[in-house]
Length: 214
Ligand code: BG6
Ligand code: MG
Image (cartoon, rainbow, N blue to C red; front, side):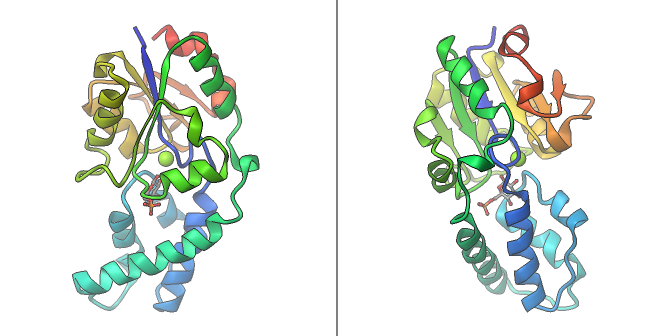
């Protein structure tokens, strides 16, 4: 029985793909490194430092750990500048309605995100108060596909992992949910993942009855 639904944030609740892309692209350009949208796709769901490794793939230079942290910090400053334009209009189709309906049915709702910017993003889209629990990039030592972020969210909801459903748009996130012994609805870029218990293009295409029937 599903007692909690844990939503990934980027690509599930809100569309931030383009903003991540623009920020990485600008940082890469300043370093003289090529970066394209296919690489940006591979940054989906993984931590900032792991994303940086994808960005640095085409670099001819070797970077020290300290230089890498500075580059990640630079990207984050560019990204935070872009986040200023985020608004409730960037909420993905069906996301808000699904959260509202789950709460009406007394199902717990949580965020399980790799992002360290999860709270300011939720604030910008006016959804910070909607969730019973938030677990994000600031809470974890192991990123997806490790289930840590979802297990923390489940614990904060007081619900056992087997009674949780995760909504994810990234391959690493689908793995994380399954590794945590949770059910998973794959959306967006992950919508053709054969491992998912349910698949949908967006949350608009799926009813809360279907979610809770899992
Ligand atoms: C995930 C995104 O939600 O958060 C990744 O899908 C991103 O692309 C990761 O790298 C970390 O985000 P942030 O905001 O902490 O840099
Ligand atoms: Mg995501």
